Image (tube, rainbow, N blue to C red; front, side, top):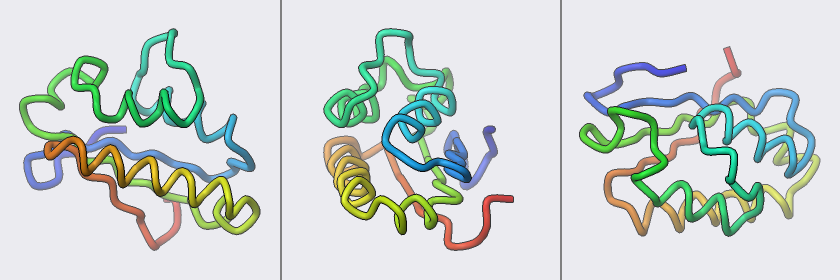
Length: 109
Protein backbone atom coordinates (compact mmCIF):
# COMPACT_ATOMS: atom_id res chain seq x y z
CA UNK A 1 0.00 0.00 0.00
CA UNK A 2 1.36 3.42 -0.89
CA UNK A 3 0.27 6.79 0.39
CA UNK A 4 1.53 10.32 -0.11
CA UNK A 5 2.71 11.60 3.27
CA UNK A 6 4.73 14.78 3.09
CA UNK A 7 5.68 14.14 -0.52
CA UNK A 8 7.55 10.93 0.27
CA UNK A 9 6.78 7.64 -1.37
CA UNK A 10 5.16 5.79 1.52
CA UNK A 11 4.90 2.05 1.97
CA UNK A 12 2.94 0.43 4.78
CA UNK A 13 4.59 -2.67 6.19
CA UNK A 14 1.82 -4.48 8.07
CA UNK A 15 3.19 -7.13 10.42
CA UNK A 16 -0.15 -8.21 11.85
CA UNK A 17 -0.04 -11.99 12.26
CA UNK A 18 3.74 -12.24 11.80
CA UNK A 19 5.21 -14.68 14.31
CA UNK A 20 8.80 -15.03 13.16
CA UNK A 21 11.65 -13.86 10.99
CA UNK A 22 10.46 -15.73 7.89
CA UNK A 23 7.09 -13.99 8.04
CA UNK A 24 8.76 -10.62 8.53
CA UNK A 25 11.00 -11.17 5.51
CA UNK A 26 8.04 -12.26 3.38
CA UNK A 27 6.07 -9.16 4.34
CA UNK A 28 8.99 -6.83 3.62
CA UNK A 29 9.62 -8.51 0.26
CA UNK A 30 5.97 -8.12 -0.69
CA UNK A 31 5.50 -4.57 0.62
CA UNK A 32 8.62 -3.28 -1.15
CA UNK A 33 8.24 -5.54 -4.20
CA UNK A 34 11.79 -6.77 -3.71
CA UNK A 35 13.32 -8.93 -6.45
CA UNK A 36 13.12 -12.72 -6.31
CA UNK A 37 16.81 -12.91 -5.41
CA UNK A 38 16.19 -11.10 -2.08
CA UNK A 39 17.97 -13.37 0.41
CA UNK A 40 15.43 -13.14 3.27
CA UNK A 41 18.11 -12.72 5.94
CA UNK A 42 19.16 -9.75 8.08
CA UNK A 43 22.10 -8.72 5.87
CA UNK A 44 20.00 -8.91 2.72
CA UNK A 45 17.29 -6.83 4.38
CA UNK A 46 19.78 -4.14 5.42
CA UNK A 47 21.29 -4.06 1.93
CA UNK A 48 17.88 -3.94 0.21
CA UNK A 49 16.59 -1.13 2.40
CA UNK A 50 19.69 0.95 1.65
CA UNK A 51 19.81 0.10 -2.08
CA UNK A 52 17.89 2.63 -4.18
CA UNK A 53 17.99 0.32 -7.19
CA UNK A 54 15.50 -2.09 -5.59
CA UNK A 55 13.16 0.55 -4.17
CA UNK A 56 9.68 0.92 -5.70
CA UNK A 57 9.45 3.17 -8.74
CA UNK A 58 9.10 6.79 -7.66
CA UNK A 59 10.69 6.29 -4.25
CA UNK A 60 14.19 7.36 -5.23
CA UNK A 61 13.09 10.79 -6.41
CA UNK A 62 10.78 11.48 -3.45
CA UNK A 63 12.42 9.55 -0.63
CA UNK A 64 11.03 6.38 0.91
CA UNK A 65 8.96 6.31 4.09
CA UNK A 66 8.18 2.87 5.51
CA UNK A 67 5.42 2.83 8.13
CA UNK A 68 5.56 -0.38 10.17
CA UNK A 69 2.17 -1.36 11.63
CA UNK A 70 1.07 -4.29 13.73
CA UNK A 71 4.60 -4.93 15.01
CA UNK A 72 3.94 -5.14 18.75
CA UNK A 73 2.74 -8.77 18.94
CA UNK A 74 5.80 -9.92 16.97
CA UNK A 75 8.07 -7.82 19.18
CA UNK A 76 6.47 -9.34 22.25
CA UNK A 77 6.75 -12.96 21.17
CA UNK A 78 10.19 -12.71 19.53
CA UNK A 79 11.98 -9.87 21.34
CA UNK A 80 15.48 -10.89 20.21
CA UNK A 81 14.43 -11.05 16.56
CA UNK A 82 12.58 -7.76 16.88
CA UNK A 83 15.65 -6.04 18.37
CA UNK A 84 17.62 -7.26 15.38
CA UNK A 85 14.93 -5.96 13.01
CA UNK A 86 15.03 -2.57 14.72
CA UNK A 87 18.83 -2.51 14.41
CA UNK A 88 18.58 -3.36 10.71
CA UNK A 89 16.00 -0.60 10.13
CA UNK A 90 18.16 1.90 12.05
CA UNK A 91 21.33 0.91 10.18
CA UNK A 92 19.60 1.30 6.82
CA UNK A 93 18.25 4.73 7.79
CA UNK A 94 21.71 5.82 8.95
CA UNK A 95 23.22 4.69 5.62
CA UNK A 96 20.48 6.20 3.48
CA UNK A 97 19.27 9.77 4.13
CA UNK A 98 16.35 9.32 1.70
CA UNK A 99 14.95 6.47 3.84
CA UNK A 100 12.74 6.85 6.91
CA UNK A 101 11.25 3.98 8.91
CA UNK A 102 8.61 4.72 11.53
CA UNK A 103 6.86 2.38 13.95
CA UNK A 104 3.15 3.09 14.16
CA UNK A 105 1.87 2.92 17.72
CA UNK A 106 -1.75 2.35 16.75
CA UNK A 107 -3.37 -0.73 15.27
CA UNK A 108 -2.73 -2.16 11.83
CA UNK A 109 -5.88 -0.76 10.27
